[in-house]
Amino acid sequence: MYCKYLKSLGNLRGVDKPPFFLYTISINNKEREKNMTKRVSKKMREELSIHQTFRMYDDSGKENAIRFVAAHKGGIQMFSNPGELVAWGKTPEMIAYALRTKGADEIIMGSSSMDFASENGFKNDEDAMTLWSEGYNTYLDEVNAVGVKPENINYGSAI
Image (cartoon, rainbow, N blue to C red; front, top):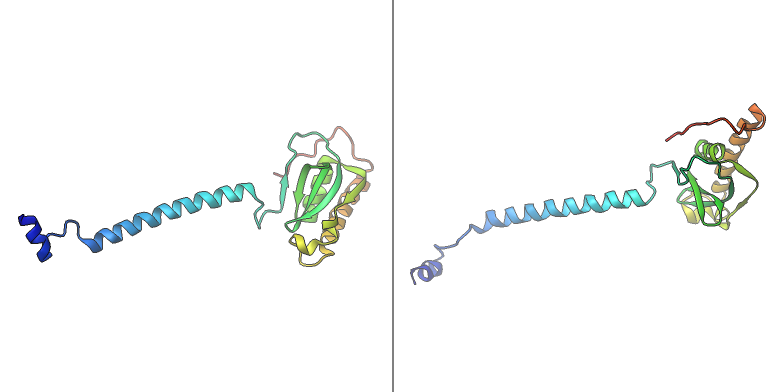
């Protein structure tokens, strides 16, 4: 009964409201921040980062000749067979590295995404073909400098 009387006067408040709300808000913000970093980290692991320039998907160490290329997220995806992604490169040097480590088929086909590169993260439509040409020409220059790529040399890994 006395509690109801004090409550009606405003003297019995239980926990002070302003500090309690600040505490609750800070706890909620910390939990949100923790959840956001989990989501961002997971998303970054699954997708290619803006700053990433190379990713090797076939890490078997065996030669797996590249037969097909496609523009993707500002870089070039390199496939050995339909649906079998070998590597993704965003610089001519990384494309040459992928070709050097996995090999190149005599005929390499390109996806229509190479012609419409501006829809796949490039500034202009011709930028994907320019990037591929620079990387492939770098690879050919390296092969021509030593003749034919020897089968028994391990070129190592850039990763």
